[in-house]
Length: 430
Image 1: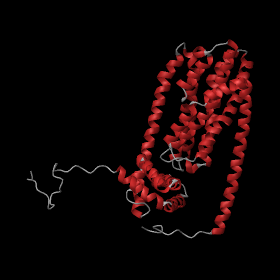
Image 2: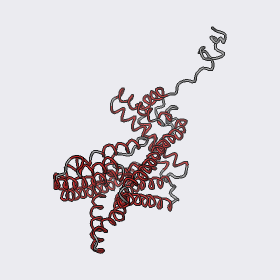
Image 3: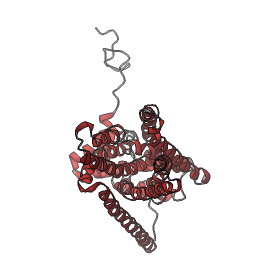
């Protein structure tokens, strides 16, 4: 086994690199501090607003019911992102932005707009309808899209395609729906406390059925359209500036339109809500789910297509592109490493898989002219990360390759088991 990289690492300038690294850490610290402060303040304000509207008991009931779909939705988006998993901090930021900042913007802006319309038209019912079908979709989708935009701009290395856009948008919308559900369910519980209704005929039960059982995917479905727009923009070359700007805008407009149709479904007649749900929402949900899964499979195909070049150059062993392009084989490799080397070895193999996947995507973009000016630097960084983890990773990946290898082709002479030309070959053997 080679003990050094297949080609030498160029010498660096330590002092200049240290200064640049220090400046980068300063900028990163300021950015994280500002975002953390913003999200913390937003969370405290939204907590006070929701609790004031629902009461303490209503808030606790709403919180307990609203949290139920959150683990399932986050797990679904995390599963979708397993080929090239983004860092958890991006998902935590997205969820916190949706639950705190976006929800606060929506509550304040929607309330202000509805009161202004009611004052201007002197018709409160008209103001509520207009606010739900026009104002709320624009405000809420814009507030949620801000999280996708921030990750797209400041975490560009982690935002490389459609799946990343879907995941960031979906988790942001999950956070937003979580806070909104606390408000709706807590308010419904307060109404039931006043009327004395209980059981399945209560307002709380009806609200829970509509928002948590029937349509927990509604908000993620809307915002995913924005995420797809950003994802396609991420796949575009840097010279295609118009496309990189227009596609996210188109995705946002589609999200607003779908949101408006959903909010306005109750005004389409007695069965308008169910008609929109069955004819529009469910088919679109199925279509976008298929698109996300298909894109995930294409990512695995990209890994299998791009990594053999690095195997030829000596950075990877020959079976590794196949193993890294199979989710089952990758899981077996992690399990093998954990079983034989402990958690640290399992973590090293998981990191090896992630770096190799990022390398495949980087090469894929580079061959199509969509990589940035730092392509060579980034490629070198990823290769060195792989090389540093080769000791625990290669035995595990070799085991996974053997475990998932297709069975040998059947003999053209069934029942004999000896290849033609071997000493034991006898076609007339009984």
